[in-house]
Image (cartoon, rainbow, N blue to C red; front, side):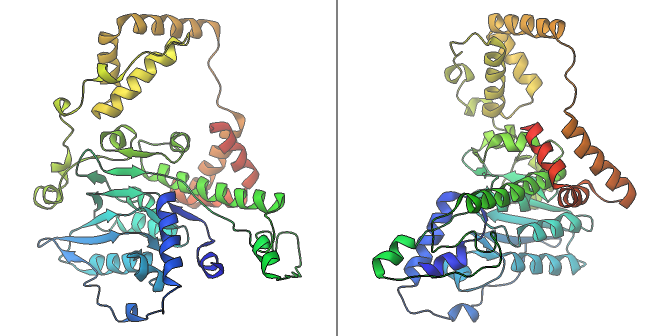
Length: 393
């Protein structure tokens, strides 16, 4: 178990259930003789030629920085492999477009941001799109969000889980049982804050939480910078939720529905399919007005649920719900107008303004993208960034 923690105690951007599965598989592997067969396994070409001009790169299973015994064991893909495949496809003059075929629960944080940055820059050379007939979660979504578009096959695809997970295991009681005494000599309070030979201290817990929060803030900033329909605040409010099918379109995580053949044979334009309304249970059967005095929230909840179920624009949902629930809509309008009368326009929080100004100034001075500016400002002004995160949440 000690060896497991030494390998997996870093932050991961992955579905918690998949993370636990990785731990279990690795634990079981330690009970059997190790094999180095993975070093000689032929896993096929770096990319597949779909036709004369399209390349398909498979991104499958848990994602790790490099190919190793663990990657081989869990049937994962390394970030390095994906980058190499992309580089080869980009260098081939006959390839005009690249499709990432993703079915992954996410993976390690280490290596994920570097690959996402590479993809974001590479799409200036050739169009790169993402497709799934399964799952795009956590670190895998960071990769997908860095492409020109995200498409899925249907109503049960799992998309999202944007978040970070880390764990600490305390072996102190096991040490006591086995008569093991561990003496640790360190140079500072933070040097061994995560020691597995003692209970996690308040300092260690807060330090770990600070690290996870920082990685998460960079995660959502990158996704927001590369998805024009999303903001960091909107992503943060998802709280790591997994969306199914049409929900993912309503949440702004997916651009359309298509099969892989659609994308290959029809080009990008063919993806603009939406779910047939007849294939979705009538909204009225799902949406029941909550017994609450806050009618504004009730009406907008009906609207948001309709958007998720029908994968439509909010304006269309408002029209549909206003027609179906005229009384609630009337009260909503009355309360909305009353609120406008009773209160002045809400100003942008100072913390949000300060951070955005720093980002804008950095972009202007350095002639760089918003994502690059955000990363630099987060690093140089951590207090301002933390205040910004608090203000939008």
